[in-house]
Length: 229
Image 1 (tube, rainbow, N blue to C red):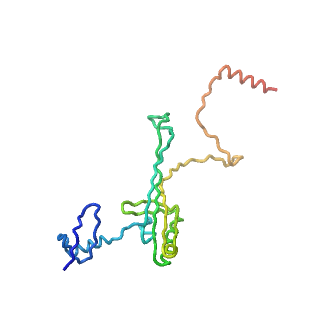
Image 2: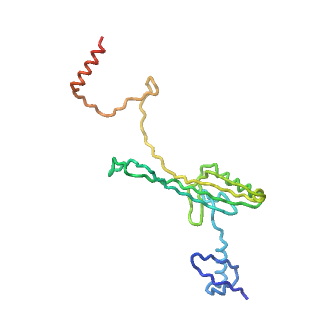
Image 3: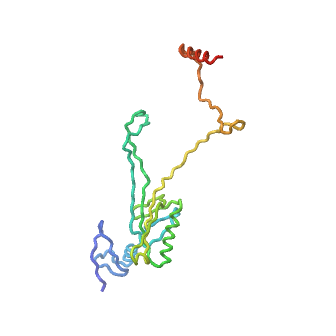
């Protein structure tokens, strides 16, 4: 006689109850067929894709478990007036500035098993720590993209931790990629200059001649008279 299971309601916050394939769900006759039971069992046993992935979607670190995940995002707001350059307020000092900074994350991963398995796990992390490559941290709810490693930490405490268990903290920062803008400016011809660092004269505009004032004329006359032999 098949064993009955409690009727677990399908409501938000209520976890799934794994059932072995082939066991009839007497409390829920509508899903009592074997294929549906098999699908329910497989979905409950599905591996959650937490991890660190490269640009091609390959998981670069394979821990036994992701133990902890932290995320920090800062929006820096200046506490002093910033000069405004907008058309509506070209000279005022009334605007304050808010800058979005790159987010930072940390992932704590654990690895047990044999000594060679733990050594390979540590090597995986060290191989991504010293590069400029960008990685994606995948969680249940969101993928955090364009991350680069900034720090790696691990500690072992006690006999069991020292010999049979590896726990690693890997810290990341978001790399905000921008496209540089370049301009082409022709250099002056200084091939025949006496000083190779000399720069050719640059025309900054037209100067219109005018009649000097009486005071300027008298000062110029006095300066010429003093300098004359």
